[in-house]
Each structure stands twice: as structure tokens, then as C-alpha cells.
Image (cartoon, rainbow over all chains, first blue to last red; front, side, top):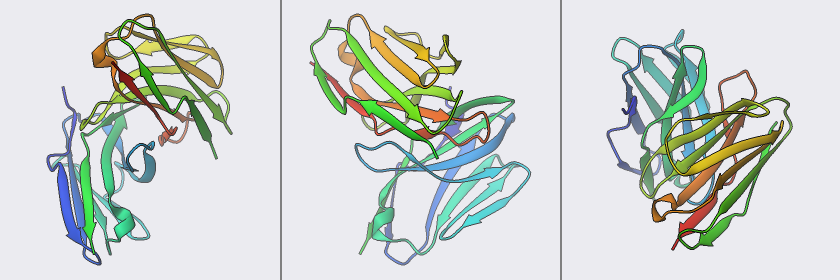
Length: 112
Length: 112
């Protein structure tokens, strides 16, 4: 049962524009959400996270928004850069369990 | 900060052969350790996790097994590989707090 869903497998955006990645979850026990970035043949790297007590967290060009009532979170990257081209995974954890549930990933391609 | 080592980086093994993948962690003590598999075009599937030496939990029934002989060493094994075991295997670690997991560089396993 997929508890974390990324319904867009791919996203293409022009350099300098905003990239918006979406993620939905079903488990109401989740209280911590993370985004990871992954290049081919490498391990994922942690990007940004948000606790359920917040609705927004910002770190440089990356902002994560959380809508608890909709069980939805999004990652905004602005401005998008060629080095942002990668697969982005949404992940969630909660209920006292440190395990992460991952979405299937969204492949972002930033066009010059 | 943590550093996670995995080896080998790539591996080609025939069906029915044994498997041993090793993961070691530097820079933290008593971390939670995880084994994930990413099949082609898929998300990250949690295979095993460990909260301490000798403590292994399996998430998915399969012909793989895991062991944690030392605090910062995590081993993924199989007695007889199947074609379906092909994939990209990732080891991850995080201290008990915070939630962020840190990933190793991964091992690309191809079973022929």
C-alpha cells in the first residue's frame, strides 16, 4: 500500500522558472516530511524537511509547503537551475517510527 | 556529519550465486541503519532496518537477509540470487534524532 504518492513522474521546466513538485500522503500518523534529490547511480541526498507543526519551511531556493488538511505537500524550487535536474523523492515518517515511506519520485529536467 | 560507505559499487552475479553487500558508517554512534532497493524506474523500497547490534526487522518477505555484527556495520546477504534481485541497493543511516536519513553511494546489482 503506497502511503506516499508522487503522481507526476516527470516535470520539465525552463531555467530560471519555478519548479513545483507535489506529494500526497494517506497516513494521518505522519508528522515529519522530507524531500530528497537523487542523481543517477548515486545515493539520495537530503534536501529539506518540514514538521507537521509548520506549514512552510524555506532554505535558499527551496521551499516546502505542507497542507495537513489535504494531506499534501509541495516543493518549490526557484529559480530552477540546470544542476537541479534529478529525481526528487518525497518521504514521510511518524507515529514514533523512524522509518521513512518514500514516493515513487519525480524526474525534473531543467531546460536551458 | 555522517559518512556512509558501501561496496562494491557494481556487481554482476549469476542466478543462484550468493550475495554479500557491506555498509559501514562513520561519524555517529548507535545509528538506525536501513537497506533499500530501487528497481528500475521505481521508488525506494525499504528491505530491512536495524535499531541496534543484532536487531534486524524485515519489511518485505524475500530471499534476502540482513545482519548487523557491529554498531556501524550492516550487511545484506542472499544464499541464492534471483533475477528479480537486480536493482540499486542503498544503505542509509540516521542517529536517533533527527529524522533525516543519510544515504550511501549505492551498489548496482545485476543478476544474469
